Length: 272
Image (cartoon, rainbow, N blue to C red; front, side, top):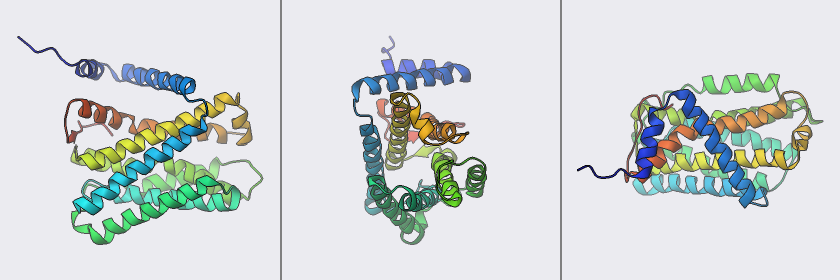
């Protein structure tokens, strides 16, 4: 007699059998449901941004633990860390010359830890760095972002160069995790600490996206007007949504793995 299947396993099996269009529809419905719940539960939606930063900090802490205690950087993409450092540095510059606030201090702390991670991978743990798996070309990520920033950027009163830099860091942040996903797809086996870190990134980016969307809804669209005119306001929201959906597939397999009691996450081909 067969043992009854766990509900989570039954649901995941059913979802896995659905065609791509149905999966996309289910993902949209799930996202909208969570947004409605967050809007009802969280009264001050600025707390979502704070929560996003907190979850991101937890993810970085897990990464630091892996590098210091495990003494290995296997499975971590150096290119993703360098792209992260790049968009944080540009965003810090924009914050200093355009709108200095508490977010500037948070970005400064994140940049410092990211530079430390890069230093550890390059000079202390280089023997465990999987360079052959980290084969996503950063030029294919940076150049399109720069070109898009030249074409679509804020229409505020700031200097043109600063507005282009602002747009560049928004676009680059949205896709900076792509090399990390490529590493995991190439290995198809993700050890726990790396999986925890990437999952934390996914949760942080979803909370950040939810913060933006709910802020737009709360202001009845006035926030988009404050960002300027033209395509830029829409591109800000699109960038937030893109960086959330890029990690959505991985987060699904992570949750499935956790509920299945698996310590090591195994990714099927085609996740990225």
